[in-house]
Image 1 (cartoon, rainbow, N blue to C red):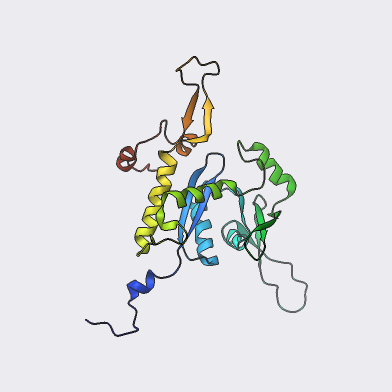
Image 2: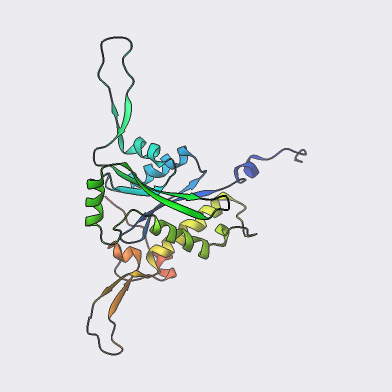
Length: 244
């Protein structure tokens, strides 16, 4: 069947435009915890936060991000309805969505000039108190300040390893399904096969010559999921872990 001029098929329309990947990182291990692909909208950000909660212990962790609309997305999954008391006149007040008491959310707000050069960085606590945020950083192993350096580092490695993500390139994806699959695979390669120098631990302080002094670890090893770096073949043949 010939297609009329100017008419776009549903498949072509579904694979046109920008494709955004939301990335959730565990800073103490650099483990890529959650990926979500879609448009850069509040609806997709809310779905991303929902995935994080579904893949965790349902507790309210400390979230750190740039100055996007995550504060509304977090309220959807880590919030509760608060009913203001009735004053006795007029309509009953509508319920308001408020964050859970143990929710901590901080933002890194970057100000740039007209040419895109960084001028100023501000750190704001959106949900939580300075005391509760400081307590989380005190218990952390690596991340001790408000920052987004760990997720930015992962994003840089994504662009290095996946030509589909390089800016101003001809290696763009023609179909969203293959674009998403490549990113998902690259993330697991980072998690299970590649060692991170920031995660190495000293096992023999006074090691002799040609004796290993450090144990190099992957993010998955730091999370306790595996005990040695996997090869690509071992990763592909590894059976998914069934959680109870």
